[in-house]
Amino acid sequence: MTLWSLDVSDNYSSHGSSLVRRFVRRRDSAAVIMELVETEGKDADRRTAFVLGGGGLLGAAEVGMLRALLERGIVPDLIFGTSIGAINGALLATGPTLDTVARMEHLWSQMRQDGPFNTSLRSLFTSVVRSAGIHLYPTEELQVLLRDTLPPTFADLPTHFSCCAASIERSAEVWFADGELVPAVLASSALPGVFPPVEIDGEHYIDGGIVNSIPLDRARKQGATRAYVLQVGRIEKPLSVPQKPWQVAQIAFEVARRARFHAALRRTREFIDVFVLPTGGGAPEPTAWRNYDFRDTSKIGNRIEAAYTASLAYLDDCDAGLVDPRAPVVDDPTVA
Image 1 (cartoon, one colour):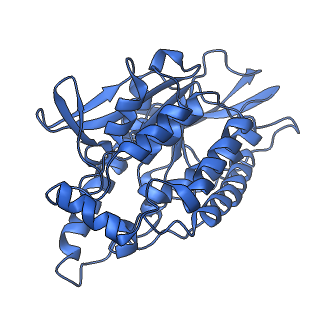
Image 2: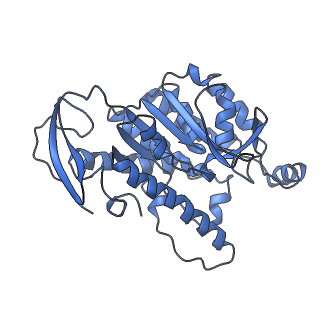
């Protein structure tokens, strides 16, 4: 890992202050020229994006990251989400403040007692039978929770928010940024086998993580000038060769998912600063069956606090110039 150290005034912050010195990377054939550009005040043209990835109950970590970011005064102009990141992102877009994050923490804590996944094995079996084995959970409880919490349409959100889902009929990545909000968020989080596909205007959608689990490339295309990636911890763990038959498909899917994110990270860092926040550990191995037990909500609080602590330390390193937001993927301190 390459460390960057800057000798600057006490007012220095890599996230915006009275005097900001930032790295600008220019590419001239094979050479990479680094120069310091001094700017007064916060860049008026800066657009900050929060990119929230998928990962089921591991998404509790994103709430801790949000608390750390907002405590440091880092507020999004644009929010992009996939799967559980779409749910967290939509909630944040109702008003990116610490009060909103506190409400999100409360909602996550409620899942431990009375959430959409808090059901008996008998109820699960009944749901599977009724769906002809297509899914474990109906969407009604989650839909009620979202309708009680979110406004009716994207236009009602004070902060720009969009989310992606995978179209079955078109075999395509589809982005939602207007119209009804809750159906789009449900579509983005309709994990195959866990929830049924969501129908919108005659088209059926499944979880956006199938096509873009951490939608970083969307942030740059929509005009972000810097991006903060909120992920659930999977990309922090190195993969290993499968040892059991059922691990073959799991590892293959994880390789495909990571390859897309790594490629997006490389492309995006050619143009803008990208900060990948850490979770503080605790995510199970990619092949662990715990990844599929949505009834196990016991670690939600620990994941929030661990990600909060780790993200504060990461942001301290950013302010100290120890994190290069244009680093190659292999040198990123968070990505395995």
